[in-house]
Image 1 (cartoon, rainbow, N blue to C red):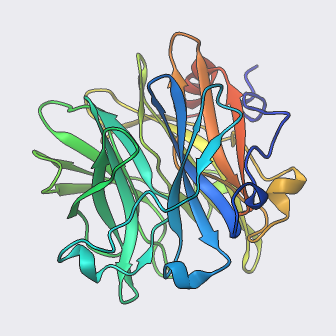
Image 2: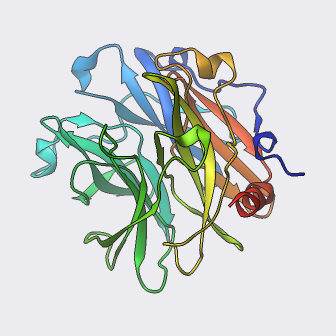
Image 3: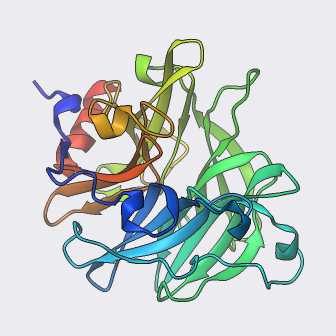
Length: 316
């Protein structure tokens, strides 16, 4: 019997990155991972001790040859729009939890940001080398968080998963939209609500889809609460139809990861395993999930990609 909770194995060197690795850092968490020139790249969410540097968090880049030991570029934030013209000149906050998707030779980065406390909304930017960042456009209204691009067109359209921000009156559901040019988005559709399992009663949220022969594999987070305000963040997965990504064809009713270790249970926000993406290697049959532990550190869990897909299909 396939037990989804046993597929992913935590790396013995966890946590891979802590605030001690970056001078002046209070928290490092919620990485967005991609492959670039045989290197593993993590876009790290960071809060500094000196919040005068920016109004919320910042995105910094870490690179690794082996996916375990990372060199962190901590001289300045990777996403810096302080000198950009309108409308980017209005943006003052958030700058964490970005999602990165490679389309052809360009890496597109969707980052939640805000203007005068109004947000979050999705800002699209791009890079080809992880040295320079170019803002492109504000591509969603507030409140919208977790926007994640598909890595290729489907039936002539670009697609994007997103999560309208949850509040006491609205569940944190996953929606999908489409665009002819990556700028103008519409045809919004809800595709999955929380509450189909005990680990995601409160809300769920997406990361960039990974193409497999069986469907688009989407690593998600799910939140539950055992007592009032006692939130626990888990990691699971969903499978979408290759030709019709509006259609859910699989999902793990069991979680893949739950906060169980000390570095996941105790931190700035306790009881958190939070992903902003994953790296799928079809040839190696490997899924690597880099995730934030308790909003304080960066961790890694790996397992068989095919087993995660199978768990989605069996547990639908």
